[in-house]
Length: 225
Ligand SMILES: *Cc1c(COP(=O)(O)O)cnc(C)c1O
Image 1 (cartoon, protein in one colour):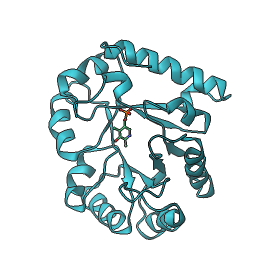
Image 2 (tube, protein in one colour; image 1 turned 30 degrees about the vertical axis):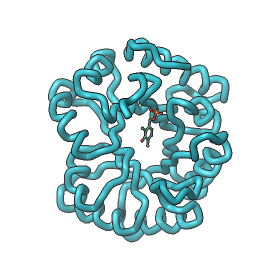
Image 3 (cartoon, helix red, strand yellow; image 1 turned 90 degrees about the vertical axis):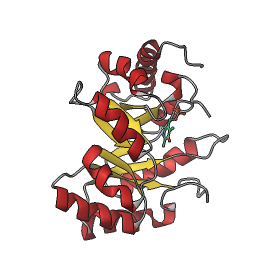
Image 4 (cartoon, helix red, strand yellow; image 1 turned 60 degrees about the horizontal axis):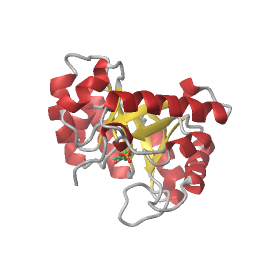
């Protein structure tokens, strides 16, 4: 389904589809949080979505998010920002200051640096462990076979507030088996949050147990290349 050029109407339609998919899976629609992915869109494009009442957003670059949300957050202080892109350790200070959820913890060094910065700043954004569910060399995320060890290290050794997992299945393949793999990592480790599903496959993700879906282009339209 293509996005119309009215992002607020698209938001309403996506919320409806989330509710329908949850109900079809015998789940409570309130268990599924929509993370509106506003990466690459300017503050002016995002503001109508805030005015419509939506408050949970995903950004993939720390610098871009910092500049954009400096304009928006003062007017909408209850906004919750998720970092969904790779995090370099030299950006950890900014990320801990800005984000409410960091979805892309994928290596021991990052877990260690995040923990140290949280202790220093006294701010403790929730963390998700990103799993490279398709074992794709070009993608971020911990290899599935190393996920349990990274989760244990992050929680036990570094006391990071890890509440779940995140994954991005390979393009051009059915996503379901990857969604099931990610759900399994969460369940084995007693983690409640499972962030999976994007514009093209969020309904399948909900049927496989997603608690968070990350949807951008189905709301804002195609991003400029
Ligand atoms: C861009 C992005 C999304 C949103 O993708 P759409 O296909 O535009 O919905 C979701 N998750 C991550 C990690 C992304 O980088």
